Image 1 (cartoon, rainbow, N blue to C red):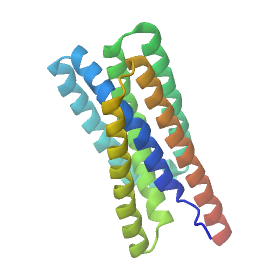
Image 2 (spheres, rainbow, N blue to C red):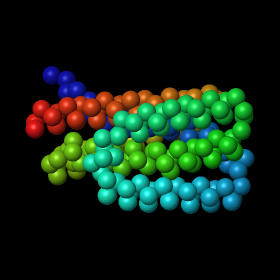
Image 3 (tube, one colour):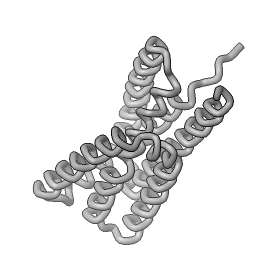
Image 4 (cartoon, rainbow, N blue to C red):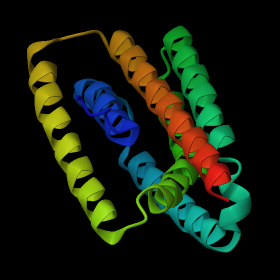
Amino acid sequence: MIKKPDRMLLATFLSTVFYSTAYPTIHKEIMLHISDFMIASEQIISCFGIVLASVLWNKYSDILFRKFTLFCVLETVAGITTTIYTLMSDNIIVYYILDTFVFALITRNIICGGNRLRSERYRQESEREHFDNNNLSTFAIATIIDSCIAMLIDLDFKIILCIATFGNALDNILYIQVYREQQKNKKLSD
C-alpha cells in the first residue's frame, strides 16, 4: 500500500522547488537596483514584523489561528498584485518595498500559524521530531535540485517572478488544505 504524502512536506517541497529556482535571479536583480540603506531598512522592517507577529501570536494564538486561511489568501493576493505591478511598471525598487511589507505583516503570521498547525498536527514528541527532520531533508533536497536547475536555465526576471509567485500561491493552497483538514479532524475528535 502506498502511503499518502504528508501535505505539509509536499508544501515544503513544492514551494522550495519554485523558490530555489527563482531566488538566484530575483536576488541578483534586486541587488542591482537597491541601496545599502534599503537593505538595512528591509532587515529592520522584517525584524519588527517577526517580533510583532511573535508577540501577538503568543498572546492571541486562538483568535489569530482561526484567521490562518485569511492570512494565506491575503499573502497570495498580495503576491499576485505585487507581481502584476512589477511586470507592468518594471519598478524593482517598489517590488522590493512591497515584498518587504507583505513579509513583515502577512507572511510572518503564516509562519506563526504554521508553527501552531505543526504543534497540533504532530502532537507526539517523536512524531514532531520526525516531521521536523523530514521537513529539513525535504527542503534541502528540493533546494539542491532547484539550485541545479537555476544554474542551467537563464530565464527573464519577469518569468522567474511569475514562477516564484505561482509557487507561493501553491504553498498557501496546500497550507489551507492542511489547516482545514486539521480543523475537521479536531471537530471529529471533540
